[in-house]
Image (cartoon, rainbow, N blue to C red):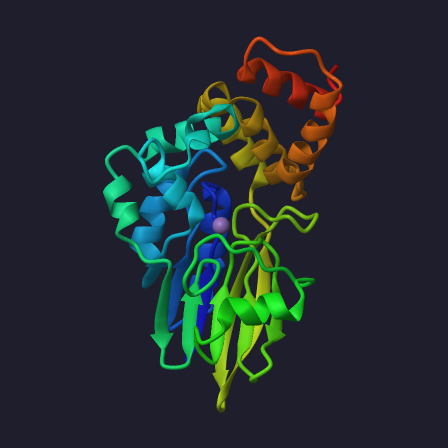
Length: 276
Ligand SMILES: [Mn+2]
């Protein structure tokens, strides 16, 4: 029994195609796409269509939820504001598909001893890292999940045992690698006796093709300054959104008032990128 798990595509079609080709070559019994297929890079619609066509099991993540809850009472009002302009592009891309996204689960039991999820078994946005304290990891899986729990969401490949011997494996990101290299990451699980062997995999892909899509699709005109930060993350394989928001908090304290939030954000991104 072999399982391929791909997650966190974030609209990066060239990366998704490369990871899918490698996953297919591994001849898995089941191919799972574990959420955050959309939002970030420009090609959310094409990535969603490819996920629907190729995945034996399709899960959604928090970024699908941002798209379908945006502008509804369930959504955060911030999701329609300047910081979420990339989501304007994504929502436009996904026109007519939002009910379909909403209908997809965040977790699934795919073998009696294997549960796959976007973040945790009951939540699509809980962050867990290799350096998370044991109590945090235990709390996220207390009474939940399976012998093998496969998650994604934080764009880092790692694995840790729980105190009771169950395993938590986090898979890296297909479309938004944040490990300092531009690569499409996924994982393959092979049953070995009573347990599972995991191999974290990474593929080279045509990063320049994805960068061109940012410039040629019209995305940057809609997504604005935060869209530029997504472009930086894709192009470099390093964090820019979290460092920017940290930078911005300090930077804003030194600035005069701005005419509006779009202007403030544009100036902050310019300052962060060293353009003024
Ligand atoms: Mn996520």
